[in-house]
Image (cartoon, rainbow, N blue to C red; front, top):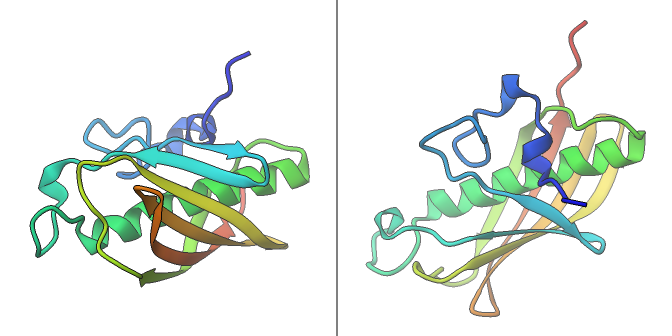
Length: 149
């Protein structure tokens, strides 16, 4: 049985995100999955996403990777808790701690761990790892968008 990425379960009307939307032809098409009690996403950034120092990833792109993986993790966790389909989440807060430069040209691993689900709010701790070294830590607070009738 094929396991669908969290983002591949988004309804078409909100699968347009630059980072993770399958319907955005210019997007990154991030894919997140459960691995035990953590979510995981792998991504190899292209060279044009360089920051101010050649060979290292632009900080805004790093924030985008954490944001999109965090949103997918929150949506999947809430769907699992509620026993329903994945629904839309938006970012209420994004905190990023850059521990050291993140290289371009290597596969990055983004990991998420759900810290709290409280009503429509989900808090996820995140790490970005390159060459088995944690380069970035962060946390997102995601809020579920109320379903329209």
